[in-house]
Amino acid sequence: MNEDIILELVNVNKMFDDSDSYAVENINLKVKKGEFVTLLGPSGCGKTTTLRMIGGFEIPTSGKILLNGKDISDLPPNKRPLNTVFQRYALFHHLDVYDNIAFGLRVKRIPYQIKDKKGNLVTKYRKYTKDEIDNKVMHALKMVDLEEFEGRSVNKLSGGQQQRVAIARAIVNEPEILLLDEPLGALDLKMRKEMQLELKEMHKKLGITFIYVTHDQEEALTMSDSIVVMNDGCIQQIGSPTDIYNEPKNAFVADFIGESNIYVGTMVNKKKVKFLGAIWDCVDDFDINEKVDIVVRPEDIVIDPKAKGEVKGILTNKIFKGIHYQYTCMIGKNEVTIQSTIDYEINKMVSISIEPDLIQIMEREYNSNTYQDGYIDRDNNVVFANACFECDITQLLKGSFINEDGYLVSKENKIYDLNDADVIVDVDFNDIEISDNLEDAIITGNIIQIIWKGDHYQVIVRTEDEEDFIVNSEYTWNENDIVSVNIKKENIKLKLKGDISKYEI
Ligand SMILES: Nc1ncnc2c1ncn2[C@@H]1O[C@H](COP(=O)(O)OP(=O)(O)O)[C@@H](O)[C@H]1O
Ligand SMILES: [Mg+2]
Image (tube, rainbow, N blue to C red; front, side, top):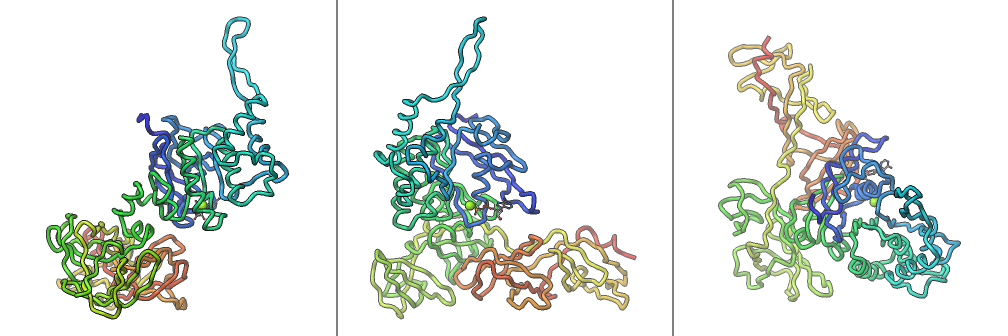
């Protein structure tokens, strides 16, 4: 066991009883003692569920939760040395600040050991004394900067002060880990920013481990030692704020954290990558011809107003953002967002340059939609993703045709019955059309993710059966739009599982 690790999640999964998909899928996470760790991701990605499993309010469907190396998966919340602060901090409104904080201490029983008459050690329980409670409450109040507020009614406090009482109530129990689920969610922006800094200060003073949940990337970057980026129940990346910002592992992380330009590129040579219609020097090595995702941060692009560089474009838009200008530069059909403190004229030709080490190259998670468990039905259609599509089965055998009985016939006049034949189905991102016309749709789904890639959107459509289609689209869609998924017959690529000879009749 590594002594620095206070908490470890091992292959943790959670599926709720009334659901047939995982809310949290295969989470592996190590938290160091004293760290400020943030679970970050969009709404519904499984942050709260993960935190509630750590807190003991939910039991994992499978996997283990270890605290200081010991499995605590079966311990109820009150037996875990943890405390939770929720977004809706349920304070007792009939009690004053002091009594809200002291409440937990008054009902607590502390074990102690004495020797009985025979000299054996026996465990007894006692309550905290009034003085002990007093000391602890005053210490907690000091920690949250609410000294001299003990006699106030909680109803007379501002939102930020109430939240501090909620935190004091949690830390007065001296937990080893404090769990915080969007604790600043109910506060207005200014108050939230103040409380972010105060919480960080408290973390330092207390010296305990914080596990914090938020969907706000800026909040995560400001406060955390380590960020766990989640999407769709899974961890996408774990790293320090600078790692996650400078070296996002995939397009989702790049898009979610900060502003970014994301493009599809191709490796054309050793440390040479093509995107935006040009070849760029870079510092990453990938296979030649490999398709990659490229991320460039807006502040890392340099504008040359004399347009002397190789990559030229037109500045089409400028917005003053206080500290810098934000420009849109059109390079061919691609949109490039650039931040600069210099005031350039727009509607002028410029050239842009990017330092090689500021071009972040990421492996593409997917290059096409592949469905492993398709099969051919009796009408020579293909069934995959729980839907039936027209397809061309003659692609499975060169020079073949379909006879009038619907069988596949080879050049050599061998006849094949492909009814029920297992196939792998492949459809290119560009070969799927999505539409808001749902009539006559073979398949419909919900848009769950949209990423702008310079000149098109990469959209993920999820069907009711939890099948995903990744689609390149030039149109603007919104998350949660319901769309139909249409694929032309000639764009469905099939590969037989096993040899065709077993289907000969
Ligand atoms: N008690 C529950 N019963 C059924 N489904 C749930 C329950 N709690 C959460 N979920 C589902 O689990 C997924 C993750 O939810 P949650 O952990 O609350 O996400 P987040 O906190 O990241 O917004 C969501 O799809 C949500 O609808
Ligand atoms: Mg939540």
